[in-house]
Figure 1: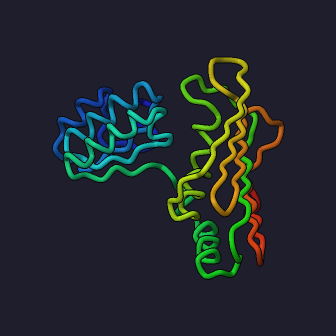
Figure 2: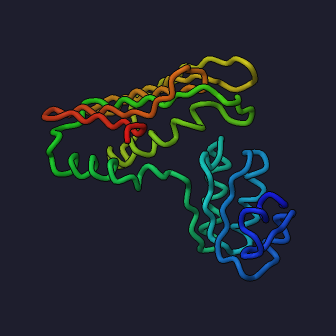
Length: 208
């Protein structure tokens, strides 16, 4: 709390217990960015208090938990928004426009690579849950919510109970997606390659 106060001063209120936040009538929305096993409890309490919720990705690591948050948001008529920030990136939105207009032709392949080294290995979620969720959100948007015909997952588990390196393959009716996620790479990469029948697009999010 002292560190936060040194940055923000007395312009904001400070709490050490999330229940005290929820007992305050002023906040209309809350943001939750906690480890999954803690975050689920806090997120449910936020929704049950009738407040909108911005949930850091991944929203949940099981389908049951995800659907439970959705059910509570609908029951209280509040917005549950997940941190899929790349959907609002101007480059991703431009690529979506190129797809919808036919400029790229028919989508053939989506390939993404998100990798870096550490600085630590997370124990509550694996590399796929932490990194690939962005690309899954993009693929889902680009495909119009199409369900994949086949899903393949390959992972390597070291230095803990979670996979530090994962390969995810998705086969759709008209294109394929390959998504690599790694916390164990000497190179930091944030790249997407999209191939269409007319044009291809390379998006390197690390280039200025």
